[in-house]
Length: 91
Image 1 (cartoon, rainbow, N blue to C red):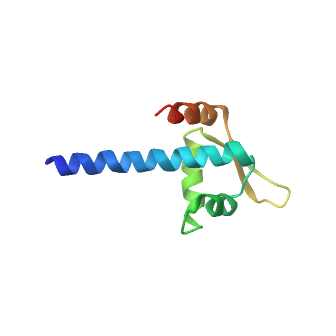
Image 2 (tube, helix red, strand yellow):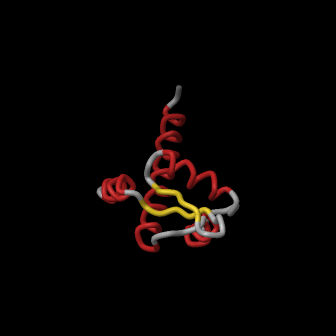
């Protein structure tokens, strides 16, 4: 494997952590958000992909998921997510 491949992997990881940092910071600031509302705030397109991305962060324990009275899916920052945000801000 050449150096270019390693650099590309490192850059992809950095972009992922930048998106995670942005996402966790948005939830810290705004609290409960639906995936489409978060997508607008984050500039995340296509908007429908927000359901998959936030679901992944929920599975990692970084976000809590709940439904409102109408059945709308909402997410909020978990304690683990708050700790990860603090850790990511250190870089």
